[in-house]
Length: 606
Image (cartoon, rainbow, N blue to C red):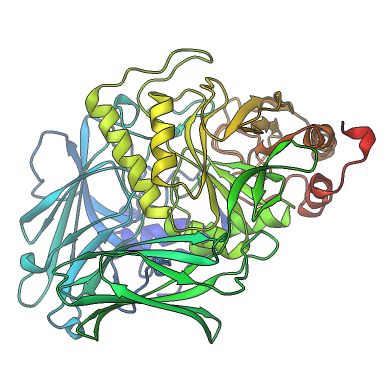
């Protein structure tokens, strides 16, 4: 069937359990806005792109598409009959899922589908991969329980080889429970009752589900760390299966040209020398192609394709002795939007990979070189687009548990809550730590779930010394980490320079403009300061940017404008929620923002 031009036709015809007719059409909230990419969602080919760009194998099978679903009471057993179809990987609460229902902490969301294993995979082991499911997930294959995973943002896998039947259709079943803000887990801005700056809950599968065949001994994870000062990249290979007689070979290429190679014993880090390395930056986001081969007795048993960017993020003093954020040893003012990563049709999930890329691409076109990914962790392909397009990323850890006031004491979490936070934090760094675009980890935002700040900061810095750490963006500063981060609305604002930390403006702006026909609801919409026209918005925005210039001269190293798009009831986006309109125009924004990178006259500075 050809792609349809309306979301209603897509969902009604493809997700109906019987031939499509008016009586079987799912009930869609036609009052909700959608993006233009919703019409490109083909349920037979949902998000078909390979989901793991930095550890890619040639063979895989996508399990996105229609699954059976049922929502039942939390403590009930697997239902005998399922309710209907859900389009994976869109959360049950989203329009694109075809369900558009709130699940809630009192219920459990069940999934079921059948699949076949390609015959050409032979006798290799079969991995069932989930890139993200929110939040607690139990998995069965052909009636065999494989295990339970907790965590809403990181990938997890099961070796399902022993659970497979010799031939024919196989069955996978999931049970998912998500307490949202009734629980302690990292959840970002999800709440059961959306309001103000908090949004609709997301339950269940929200990233790609897929199969891949692997050898008995295979590459499980890569750790790629550029070392610009020493002209090399350090590569560590984590494996599964027996390691006897195994070695690793790493090749770096610049296009068709091999520029570096290193080999060593499996389990030992490799230092790959990169002569005259091309450095990655927003102006020149050069990436080396990598091939990592796992060999046993000289014979390749597993092989993956990857890439790396040679770049260094650090603190350093400029010519006037002011501590700055440095990229590749030079001061670079970092400016970009607070990016929530929400979609009116898919909620946590972009309708297509083109849509996912669009937000990054338009940010660059607006004259910005950085994005602060706000209390959400994206699919691997989002970071891939940032790597390719040359966008610096400040990556927030999603908040959870209780919050503190501006100058309150750290939360005293339960051991279960604290242990879970640390586990999900480590998973975030392990999952996305190879992305050259990520230059800063943000541990806590405005006191949301903030606890043991100094200890958490010290752990991040020791676990990933290649990046900077923002301990607490705004609010409860503990004089730790690499930056002093202030929030000022509408602002802008700054803080006194420090000897050991750079000064950054973690949030400012929030100028609102509700645009009729592009709003999430008819209720009161919210912005830090609501304006009446695009012209008034542009003038106000230009005034804010003009005020930033002397602050940069006096020591401000970065600023984050709120925000990329409107989100639900918030109308303070540079774009409308449906991405149909850049409110101030891309050219205007590029012209205004470009002045932030120009030399500042002495009269404006010190």
